[in-house]
Image (cartoon, rainbow, N blue to C red; front, top):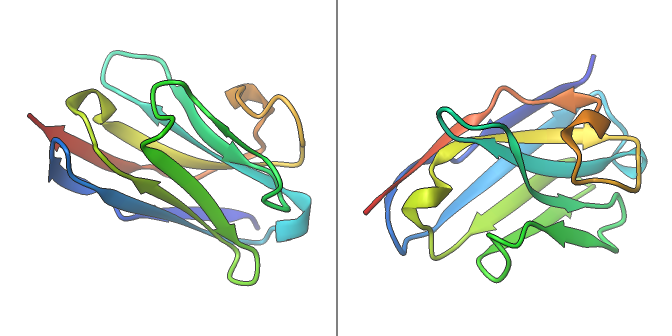
Length: 124
């Protein structure tokens, strides 16, 4: 049974930082690319960042480039999202997701498994 569990969300002031983690079980790290998506109230879920299984490639939404960094530790089967210089518009529920695909990682429909989400709130 595949399970993705996010942690690390919370409330932070604008300009602050948070580090999200996603612990995966039931999936072989070498078989899955991982991504983070977010959904703000009243908005559709949007792509944030993704990383291939080998960490050879990463993909970032323009809105987070230079502020967010994704990394993964396949030995621990975890994926981390370091978020710096947070802005109020980053407020959303952040979801971790896994896919067997190695391409088109920005499309939520291409992901096979999802976590339950963790809330990130950035105050101005």
